Amino acid sequence: MRRRTASNERALSPTAPRRRFGSNGGAEAADQPLAELNPTSALSKVLRQRELANAARVGNSRSSRRAAESANAVQPVRSSARRVRPVATQVVIKPASTHSTPRSLGGGLHPLSNGQANAALRAYEERTLGAFDRVVPVLKRISALQHEPDFIAQAQRLALAELGHELPQPVLETAWTSQLDMRTLFAWCVFEAYEQTSLSFFNDDPLAAQSGSADAEAFDSFLLECGFHLLDITPCADGRLAHAIAYALRLPFSSVRRRSHAGAMFDVENTVDRWVKTEHRRYREGLPNPAHDDTRYLKVVVYHFSSKDPCHEGCAAHGSDDKAAAAQGLQRLKDFQQAVENSFCCGASVDLLLVGMDTDTDAIRVHVPGRDGSTNLEQWLDAHMVYDATRNLTADQARGRIVELVEAAAAATPDAGMVQLIARLIEHNMSQIDYVRQYHGGSYSDFGHAERFIGVGIGFKEVHLRNLTYFAYMDTVEEGAPDLDVGVKIFKGLNVSRGLPIPVVLRFDYHGAVPGARERAITHCERVKSAIEARYSDLCAQGLLHTLLTVRDRDRHVPAETVSSSITFNTGGGH
View (tube, rainbow, N blue to C red):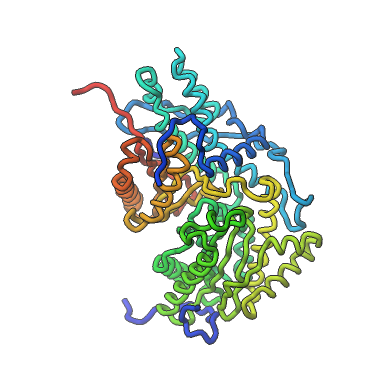
């Protein structure tokens, strides 16, 4: 595949004051049968949900149905032993001003809603998810053409016009001797759609939130004013929370350190290492502020629940038990805080915040902590309640009322900076509640899993869309096997049940300033790929699991670089 382009003294601890006054630092209290590509009988519930969501999205926007016919083609695939191709050409879709007719419930937007931002985010959602959701309809049309005399020319024209890229020539050329290999074509097209997504995200900044952007700089300043020098958020790896930062919380992605984990159960040791790096940079470089400034490191966990089907569509890692998800999320936060304090003394205290998210409506609920570090699992501020309580006020009145509600919901006397930050998150969530009301009738029709591919490894900074990716964060398959098994089980229902393969994108980011880092990242990808193929050998042997290996230089704002794929083609000739 062509690539995309010496002292024994103890270290000083940060000077931020301890936030848990009087605390002793302790913790508080089945596989399905295969089917052909086309049949629609006996679809699973999640497939039906995806069809409904896609129909609603496509039906509301004629402009998002096709890629621009003028899009440039990628170069044809050369016959070789590996899948070789350049970076996918970006699909350009006209962003119509009438992208979707708003379907607000109750009439009008909340006074704090940003309708213009909602429209821009909706256009991005339709444009990006549409690239994935066009794959099956286009392949069905191509399948019907495979016995035409000029099949290859027709198929390439159709793929180029609808998907923005050509199909692998070797697959098309064998269609006359055997059935067209739809599984390979499907995986190829999904991987192309992912590459287009990565390319557009880094080159075009569709979310207007790159480092140095106006929104990012404004929020960074606000965060420091609130008393925090870094915002580290761990949402659950469930694809229904992949948009938590850019959509549900409306935060600039470059202003947030995000690392998703199943059940939001982040790795404490790794998080302590990232905390050390953050504080070391404050000491050495004064970034984002000098170490002697009175600011703290804020660690946030975002767990999730379902208001539509709480007993089945909640967090799988916690058995769809909302209380368990919240309790274990809080315990993991406390473990991190305790680890930092045990290693770097009480002056190194971090602040903690627990947030819940309804995956059906995107409304959040915040467990407002007290200044003493206490958090009440039975008490939270619900954004839906805040929406109803403030929708008839002016914008200024609504902001004032939100601050009052945050203070009243606190487990104990709250920190003023924490109150201001939570009030801002609640205010941002007003826009997202309206977003779901405008474009999804108040709650998502695909309230279960409907992800398009599995992401494995470390990275995926460009993924900020709901149900785009099921993410399995891991360094090795052995340690990440439970998360990966969950993803494969989900995709057996989504794809394998229809005879479609599971697309797996491997990703390991590296520091370009470190000699040999890129080569080690590639080796890491190949090692994980081999482990995946061994673990799911039956699926791989049937062509029901394909992998795409990518790496990215995290020190530069560049797209992911594709280095190889499980999709290969035999060369002719020789003995």
